Length: 140
Image (cartoon, rainbow, N blue to C red; front, side):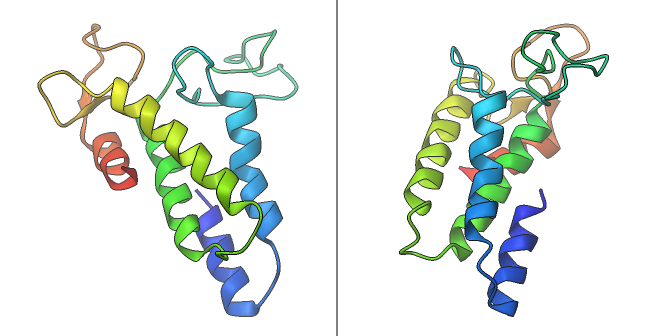
């Protein structure tokens, strides 16, 4: 969520933080992306000590729509500011394309919305979520 602000700061003050900004997306995708679905788990704990963390992977058990939305919005906003000739820009575009493919597959049937928990469509206490849907739509 903070990377668009970091990118703006870098532009305004002429600081070369672009590798660090790009790596935030690269590392999150590397550690939180589910190979089967392409979705990003809501969280990742490197220490694997958090109560919610899988003790083997450090990942949370769910794919939260709002978190995916924040990731996608942040990536889109950063790409607008990212230097066109920077070697990491292509990698960020590839991440965005994988992200878009993954969320397109979990959009609710017969709706323009996404579920709160993307991997549990139609389950009890899960619902079509306006904030997640707005964020994901923006990213798309």
